[in-house]
Image 1 (cartoon, rainbow, N blue to C red):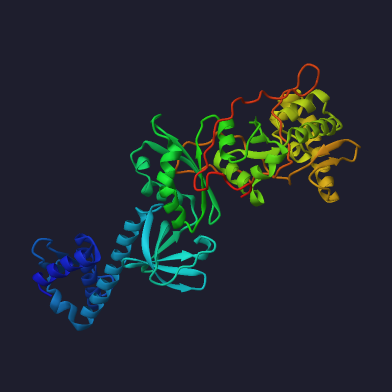
Image 2: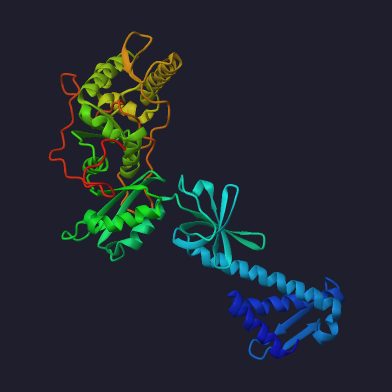
Amino acid sequence: MNASEVLRIVDSLHREKNIEKEIVFRAIESALVSAARKHFGEEADVEFMIDRESGTIAGREGQTELDYEEVIGRIGAQTAKQVIIQKVREAERDALIAEFSEMLDEIISGTVHRNEGRVTTVTLGTVEAILPRSEQIPGEKHEPNERVRAIVTEVKAQGSRVKVVLSRTRPKLVQRLFEQEIPEIIDGVITIKNISREPGHRSKVAVSSQDVRVDCVGACVGVRGNRIKSIMEELNGERIDIVPWDDDAQKLIRNSLAPAEVDEVILCRMMGRAIVLVREEQLSLAIGKRGQNVRLASKLCGWDIELMTQEELEKQIEKAVGGFSAIPGVTEELANMLVGEGYLSYDDLSVIEPDDLQEMGGLTEQQVQVIVDRAEELALQAEMAGNSPAAKVDAEGSGLPRNRTPRETPAPQEPTSSPAEPVSAGEPVSAGEPVSDGEPDSSGETAQPEKVEDQPPVVVAGETDQPPPEN
């Protein structure tokens, strides 16, 4: 291998494999050293250097200059070849990892190669990526040679190969499709604030406009719905609701529950919970099919949304105050304060922060612990009794609603404005779970929070002018 051959090999690998020339030079040098040590021993002080301009190879063993062709021989040449191949493969793998790592969370197009069990293999140029069944939209089936678009979710080395994992179920795919179909988003006029999604069924996309002259919802829908229709087709017919964003959490919750009409929104910031009052005829529409509408709205807004009528709320408040007041150490005034902050069940009370309860009631640490322990006992009794999620009657004869399983309640959060990190809310609770944001007045009665006036209009895209009563 003379100098010109070295330069030719380096240039060829650089162009064909997209490997830096310096990496190839080092691979050849490392291969020559490995081959020479087969002759001089593994501990020998051997070094080879290649001139990057001329391709000339110079070697030494200690202080003695070496002629690499004479020293290596036939066996050494085979060793050098194997080392070069290994180093080139590693360099090629690293180059591919770097290339696809820059495409994480970006949309990419490929061709379906084959289906093997629960995995679909997709060809992306020289790389075969995998689209697991868990990352495919429910109900869709990909045939060989079919073009498919997905986002890159994972890139890592797997031996001498590169493992690239794709997904079609992430909210990020919806965002990227919006960016491709709607120029106003790329131009920065319209911003995607948040996305909640149940793949193959329904998505809610919250958008806002930086220009008051641009209707963010109308721009996303397009003329006769042409823009939103193309996105829905790519997502296998998935329904998409476009929700106008509002920094006011109460207004945003109203918008996100469309097409249902909301009467009142009460925020319980300590519990991170929002109670939404609707009329009886609007309740099923607000909940949606299998709770889908309220569940997606909860994720979109970042609040644990609970739906009920005004009559249900009044009953729950009355029973909750009576139940809490029966616990030793809880006065009627403290019970009203707890209900006003959204604590309406024994489970809620059992997970309250001790410092918050201590401050609200002016209690000692020992008194707080007694109250929490008693609440846990009563919650367990109600659960073992197997009663319905409606009002429960505790062992002391006081009615108290218990309507959720014990869990840690997250601190309230204002919805994020970053489109890259959608807010993930806890699992929403079905209709009939009460929350109140009222404060007790001087008479000990729980005051109802001020109602939000003038419900803003909500536009739901991706549907006919009149959405179905349920779904």
